[in-house]
Image 1 (tube, rainbow, N blue to C red):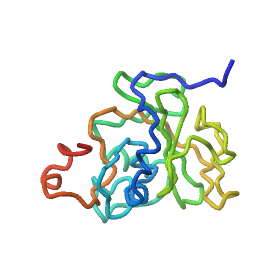
Image 2: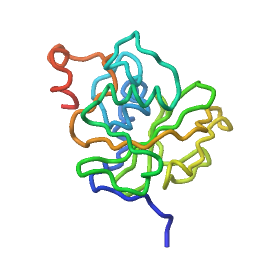
Image 3: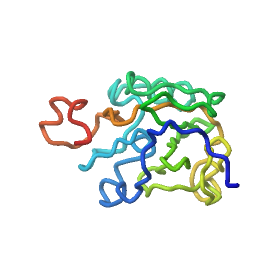
Image 4: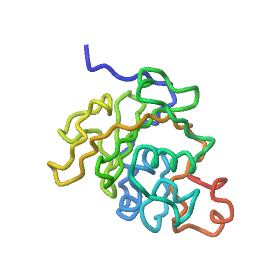
Length: 196
């Protein structure tokens, strides 16, 4: 009997990490937030997306606490993302949604997102690097709450505080940021034209 997976809704995205790295500029300008939302753009962005930047613009409060990051995610995608508490980890997301997870660094340095894939395991995209299916101990992730999120020993940041799960609506144009380089046709209506 293998490791226990968290329940799936059947709407989880298929793992396709190579798509997020096929172009060096796309890899560099997509991060854990865009990956958690499955918001892959085939054209490069001007910088990495940040929670709240799409909804609130450059003047948003970028404090790194569980509550502030959660509020900003919901502001960016009010109809597409649902907060799913840590206590509900063993519940399936509603039909049409998949699970995501947020952890932060207790010192307010950074946040990190993970998402559940169609095989039930979890993956994440550390900043502008390649997508990974393993935690800080290089083990597959079956539950991000129990995974080793202490990347400081590998030169990264420790995400020691688990915050919340989310249920993200699949295939409905979630957005991770408004700061992207894009054709004029997309700028006219960014929500309608995303991910085409």
